[in-house]
Amino acid sequence: MQEDSADIILSDPRFKGKPLTWELDTAEYDQIRHAWLTHVAAEEQLFQPYTEEEWKAQMSTMLSVFSDDCVMELPALGQRWFGRDGAERFYREFIPSFEKMEWIPQALVIGAQGVLDVVNMSGRLLRPFAGLTPAAERLRPQWVIFFPWLPEQRKFRGETVFSIRFLTEIERAK
Image 1 (cartoon, one colour):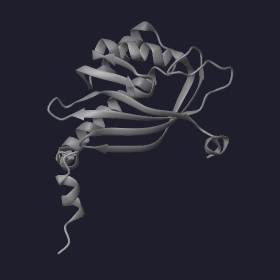
Image 2 (image 1 turned 180 degrees about the vertical axis):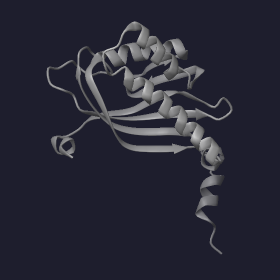
Image 3 (image 1 turned 90 degrees about the vertical axis):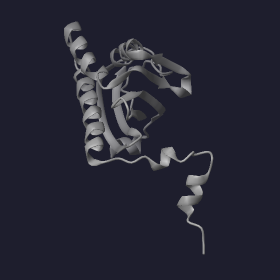
Image 4 (image 1 turned 60 degrees about the vertical axis):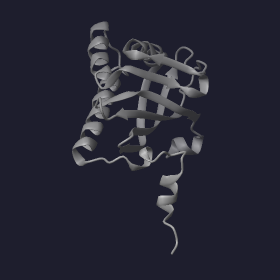
């Protein structure tokens, strides 16, 4: 009898079983989805001109779904921001760096480990951010962002932006 390939993978010490065997019921799925949507809805409010009062209100909502010890990370650049204060610093660097920012979701995966979001973005870069250089024309990068979920806290551990690549002319026309 042939050994089950899933059993082989789950017994591999590199996986230690847990990441591939997390269970997710409908209620937890809904909670993860709701937390992500709460965060994104507040963030998108700041893609438009805002007052400092509006910033504080939206930031409070955005950060409410993150753990106190959250980490915002751009691994390719070795940049990290720690805790909710660090997360706010990250957003104060990121959001005002772009003018007329627009996000178009391409793929969204919600599971026990969190949310993986692939998004096409466009906007004019006003100041350096994430290794990008300001330019007169609109930039059109694709971002791959992971929001790791902490089931015991029922919050995200932050955001990890794994890659940023520029869309080709053909991809932008789709």
